[in-house]
Length: 116
Length: 112
Image (cartoon, rainbow over all chains, first blue to last red; front, top):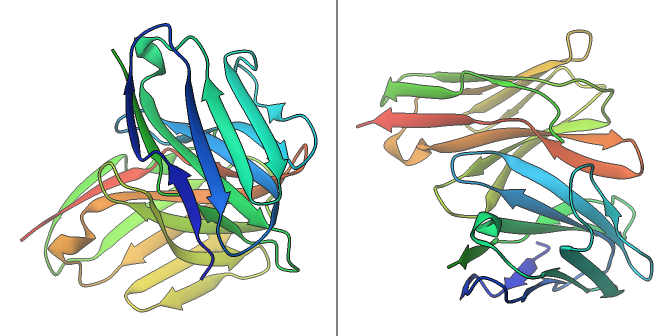
């Protein structure tokens, strides 16, 4: 089946630094990728939708200057958390939609970000 | 944004019992999916039901969909301790492009 990978799986960074998370579709091409955020014991909240070659569309309340998204190719999207603060600590999950006929959506394993 | 609520928020049952989780959503949907998530782990896709379907089965799972009430239910029969996890419904909505929106989730605990 289709696989979506995320790297790193875990990252710890200091306040004020920036962290980049990669999301790759391994065996399919994805014109659209999605980034979700999940706090402990909570559900997944959609942050933004990224389309290959164009600017990401952010959900209401998500700061686009803080969460920079780049979707430079059909198999890679990156999320950069800029000037991270402890409240940005969360589980970040990406998802990729297969550009094939069925357009199914597959989820990555998530990245645990801890900001100290 | 989230589509809606799941009911109950938490459920504790004995092994062998059935577990029923409900999900409500707000907007029109193309399909509804159920996912499982073990603590701190990624999502596992369980089942997809399309908007023109009313019921679907997969092993010990039974999903119903009532589009008139904008609700769905997930039934796990003969539960096992390994079924302990959080369960989320997710709907594919077509506002501002197609995107998947998750419900609040139900935390299921199956006691051995």
